[in-house]
Structure formats: structure tokens, C-alpha cells
Length: 283
Image 1 (cartoon, rainbow, N blue to C red):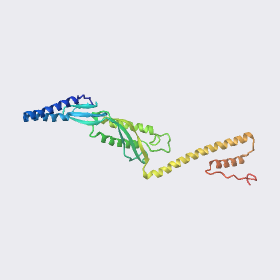
Image 2 (cartoon, helix red, strand yellow):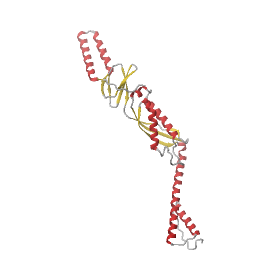
Image 3 (cartoon, one colour):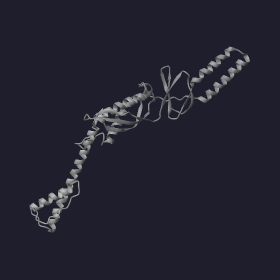
Image 4 (cartoon, rainbow, N blue to C red):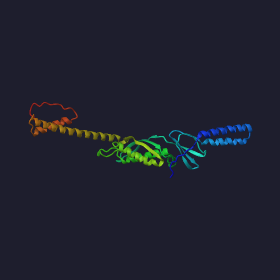
């Protein structure tokens, strides 16, 4: 397999001056001598014209002579080469590709919508021009394949195992894997992946509502757990302080009643309504 090789063409300005001199001489000879054979010089002038080309910044030209790869011109400027050379333009600029949102199943089988943002650049012009049919189309297809593989590797979210890497919580790790997968796939076309990251991620419409309720329920349970945990600590601290300062002598029944009341007050969603008890504990 061939690799890219540089090609140093001739400056186009010298050849352009020669071409205009040739044209002027041909016209003058035809006028003075009126010999039609001088028209052949005009044909030579026309033959020289396809050899001129310009290479813009961050552009390149891949030169091929009757199927034989001769090299790549990356230097900017105005040049002239053999007119029989075909000159295929290959951009060396960074391209930004925002893929379409595709519906795929994650690791747990849940349908999700996902898209990626890819920044890529042609690094090997020979591979981009000859190893694949259309390198821009190749990027789109391979990006779609990499996204589907990535979605099948990770779950969108995991409510049971908080330590597991998921598409939603492990963005850094997921984007790193995506970039590595794309770099491996696009290397055949001589393309360098500059950056790859998930641009859009959501549950599919048919399960989005149910998953939202599940996320809300998980959040509520976690919040309740924290509230109960904090309330238990506060009740324990209150009983210790009362016993330590001997403010009131509580038997087991009174402690149980106090604990019950405090837990209700601390864990309730609404503000507690105070009740003045002028009798005993049971009346």
C-alpha cells in the first residue's frame, strides 16, 4: 500500500510568461506570414493551459498521471505541471460534522436518541483519495456505525449501580471511547479525529415519560433517606442532651412518645401544628 509523498511543482509564473509570449508570437506570425502552419503554435498554447493550478491555504492537490500516483502538492501558490496530470483537490481544513439523531437501543435494551459532534481533518491525502470511494461519505457512515456500537456498549442510566459508567453520567469516559473508536475506523481513509463527543442524548419518545417518573421516584427516595437519616441523628442528639442536663426525667414510654413526635415533625412535608397538652401524657 502506497503512502502520501510530497511533490514539488514548477512555479506557474515563468510558464505563464512563456505561454503569453507563445500566444503573441503565434498571432504575429499569422498576421505577417499568413502561414496556417503557425496555428499549430496556438494549439501548443492551448495544451499548456490545463497545467496551471492554484493551491489555496489548507488545500492540496493529488497528482495522477494516467493512473500512476505522482505525489501531493501541499505548498500554497501558483504552479504548473504536466498538462496530462489529473489534479484532485483534497481539503486539509478541519471539518465539523454534526450527525443526525439516531434511535438505537442501549446496553439495557432501552430505546434512546443519540447524536455526536465530530471534528476531523484529512492527514494522509493518498488514503483519502484512493483508499475509499468518497471520504466525506465514509466519515458519515462510519460515525453512524460508531454511535450505534457506543450506545450498545453503555446503558443510558443505571439506577441500581451508581458506580457503573453510563452514557449520561460518564461523559468523559464515553467521549474518550467514542474518539478512539472513530480514530480506528477512519484511519483507513487517512483521517485524523480531532475531537468527538456526544451532542444529543435522550430517551426515545415512547419511554421518555416513564423514565422521567422513574428518575423522579429515585430522587424522592434518596431525598427521603437523607431526611430520615438526619432526623434520627437529631432525635438521638436531643435525647442525649436532655439526659445529660437532667432537664426532664423520661421513662421508656415517654422516650418512645417523644421520638415518635420528633420523627413526625422532622420528616413531615408540612409544617407541624403545635398542640398544648394540659393533662398527662395519655390524657
